[in-house]
Length: 488
Image (cartoon, rainbow, N blue to C red):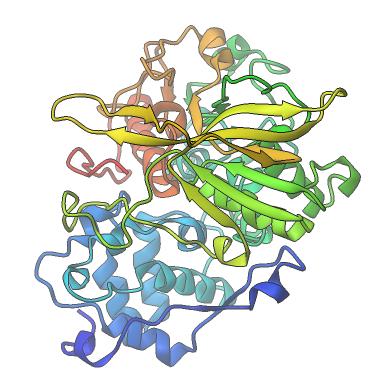
């Protein structure tokens, strides 16, 4: 695949970025694409490795060496066709996926891995540019109807797959616009929302019905849905935000990260005025949580014009290289420095927040922390110990809690009479994605728990196969055995 000696001739080359001082003035994407010839060279680096471990690293099972080879040879349309065989929305994953495929790349054993994610994004962007991505509605329709609840990547993937099988599919979205966390959780500087809109236009042209402001369990009765549809797929995500139960957590200024990001995204989209957003302007901002959501808060705070931005992570600082106990091709927990970090932030690891401090009017003015140490013993759960004498006070006007999610909201489970698992997600196995209620299925974060966008799309596609089989007795929709894939 690729050029036989390409990995010896070409070094890894990533997209470059507009300088931080220029890009933080707006919410536009700021990557600078590589020239086509350089992209071909990156495709040429893909080795004829015999066993492409990138396949197992990718939850979608993308045919990565195949589309890399087509890019190297300049056959972009064929590359796009190969890419779309396994991935409904490569324009999303090409921007937002942390690329577990690259960590599993054979070349990555002793060299920089192939730039799989960037190649993927450029393939789909060229396909849109050339007009190769068009609506492809099914030639015939079954008499079956399916309701998809939630329009994130899992819901949209399930909807497109089931529509391809000929079923009449309706997507119910509780917000004003489609996309779920893609639209309201991901800042525009990581993915502008016209990227979502152009794909939604294709899905609607294929015959998928989309209803917004349709909150099942609130303004739409779940029992009525069961009467009106032959099958229901729950793709509402794991949206219960994790809190921090310490003194002062009710102070004004202690804010959930997703509330902060959603309002700002609505402002950028023209749905909210800036005075209605949770502003970081001229404030000392502390982001608690070191994951991608925390990074998004950092980038957004800098665009607001924050006085200072600080980031706390309770875990120890990861190593910059692959840890010895997480060998190739497994996903490594190593230090991640994002483009938002490079825009301005002070990062601290092994720090636990003990108390929020406020004034007489209930406004946040600061917080107290303590350094912590993790103790690991074989066969035991890690223990967190506070380091004596490390207490510290910090000035803080806005504390953003980027602590992840604890599971799915219970509204749908209660309305449909569904079982939930020990992690408060909807109980449905990978065997058939079916819940304990006949005709009701679950996929994505709502079933799996908070995870990656590639897992969400994979779950939507897998669930669609089983829903189709439930409706028709068998299914020709693709099915992938993901039982041996590492959990990321």
